[in-house]
Length: 239
Image (cartoon, rainbow, N blue to C red; front, side, top):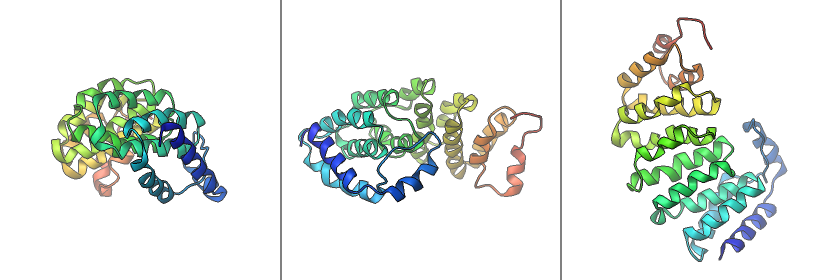
């Protein structure tokens, strides 16, 4: 199966299994808008497992198809592209990482696709030592908010291996980010770090409690007891 055939098969599958009721239900989770077919996650993942082994050139075929999927603006098509690429873990290279970085200008425009990258595909590059954490540094200043969000989300899976101190220092520039979706990603990262090393994370939060966006603290302190959360309330007026 070449890239054109891959696109055709995915689109035919999406049309066949489209579900207007699911489509209406999913739209509530995407404030920036949602265009799609209404497929379930189970339907998508099952089809990915069926398709991936059939690709003529493995990951190269998938990479050629991803921009075509993104051009449609249909949620499930991009999801298929990302998950098919993810299935070729043994074929990941620094060049593939760079290519993924270019996708934010083309079609990674919602939190779900950003988190698909951050939770599944991107951690594999770190796990296999294809790249280092420093390779994400340009992403911290990206003009695309979902690329910035990807950094803390990606690093969550590294915490049990490298600890919290270095990753926390690395994402610190995002503590002054202006975008809600980035605040959520940073807060999620800090919450997971707190589970492993509460003392380090709490010191970090105390450092930023008067200046960083409150949404970060809402997420970061979510698993704390009520009395613990009170320590991180802002003591002076601010957002």
